Image (cartoon, rainbow, N blue to C red; front, side, top):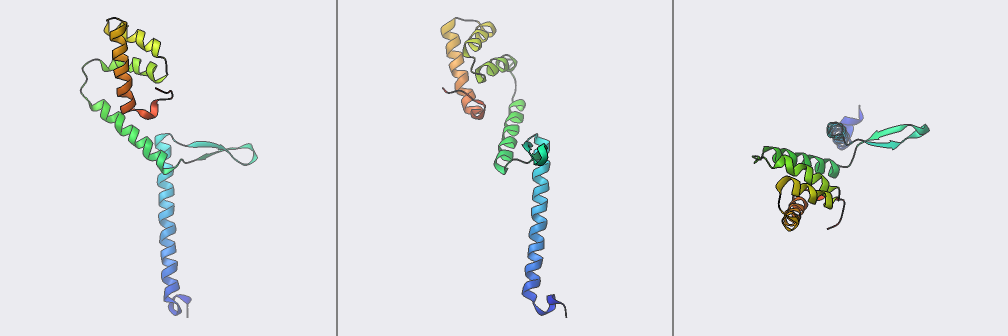
Length: 139
């Protein structure tokens, strides 16, 4: 007689393990696909000086998807024509180039230095709320 008939508990255990392994393979494939589509593959040193690609953590995948959703939502917002002008200024702010951002604000919106400083400070606060992960500098 086969072992499965003499030991039904072992047969159930084997079936559960097989299902678990199949689910793990599916999850591995899903992670790899997501990392490829999101451009999140890591390059790590492998054996014999070769470079090995590996997937990132689930948290990093979720963060990338969250950021994509935020970017898509921002694109769906109605534009009053200032978005294009602010995008160049935002880049300077996120790079920590505040003086250049201040100059660009004055060029784009006019006004004096105090007005430009107010606009810069308000924009920095908004960017910190909307995109905190993009800030590489302190306050």
